[in-house]
Image (cartoon, rainbow, N blue to C red; front, side, top):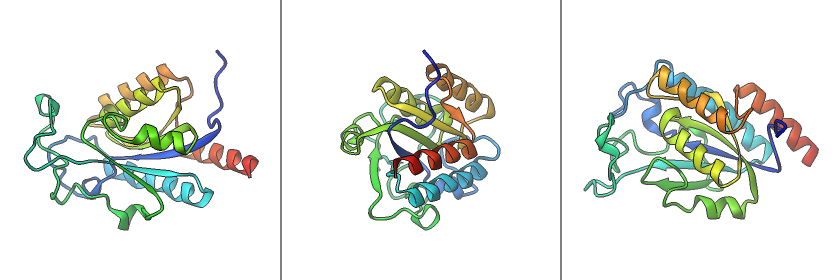
Amino acid sequence: MPRQPTIVGNPVLLVIDIQSSAFMDVKAGIPVMPGYRERMEQALTLIRAARELDVPTVYIQEIHRRDMVDYGRELDGSEGIHCMDGEPGTPLPAEITGQRPEDYFVPKRRYSAFFGTELEILLKGLKAQTLILIGGMTDVCVHYTFVDGHQHDYYCRVAGDCVGGTSVAAHDASLNAMEYLQEGAVLPCDDILAALRRHMAKAA
């Protein structure tokens, strides 16, 4: 198959788990790679551009009940208790991301933003074809959301400098795995932004 264009049809920006903890010095329960906060700050560039270009933005939030009934097997691996309701790092920081009432919001209990959520119904309503992924963690929630998006036949794109993983090695491995599924999926923020501007200008 020939390499597909960066943006196909209607794009939607998925802001995955850019929660208050992303901008805090201590991140409870989850290890992060060096420079994680800077990557989340870089992601704000695409959020602002989506707003300017009228690209729908969906904010994803991992959030767990305080009685821990919905963690399932998440605590069997390297992660400790994280994203618990009522903890200071769990809310979405609208004062930083600029999240508006007219943006879309999807809470989730598992890593993939598709698993047990309304995301697929929302994307169908938006007639989405290309999903642009930013946020964290590259090797967990971003990766599994990408895979599910791929299996739902969306064109999936990841801004490689707007996502951060649990380690540099895990981050790089996941970006390679996503690129394996869709050639040209992983691009710098500037390249995705330029493609998005060209595409939306043609569609206007």
